[in-house]
Length: 104
Image (cartoon, rainbow, N blue to C red; front, side):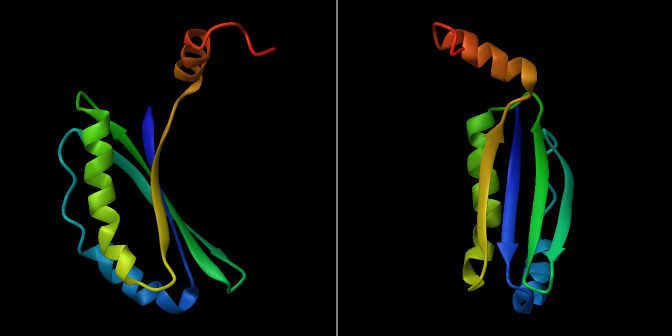
């Protein structure tokens, strides 16, 4: 499972968002990261996506840690953000098997 951090904001707030990203502390050793990756949408806004992989740690604790990490963005008026867990195919199939009778 990975945790995906998503953020969006209006272009007028990019400087404030960049300042927050620059001030992020290093992640704990058990949390790896890819990104952030950015997408600018036709002068309407910015979207950012970061993929976090938790190695040998408590996933729930890592989720809480990342939510705290994103809290400074709440002070920027146009920003919305989330941190959600995503499963790879084998994990998703296992979850479906554990849910009971087949869906199809």
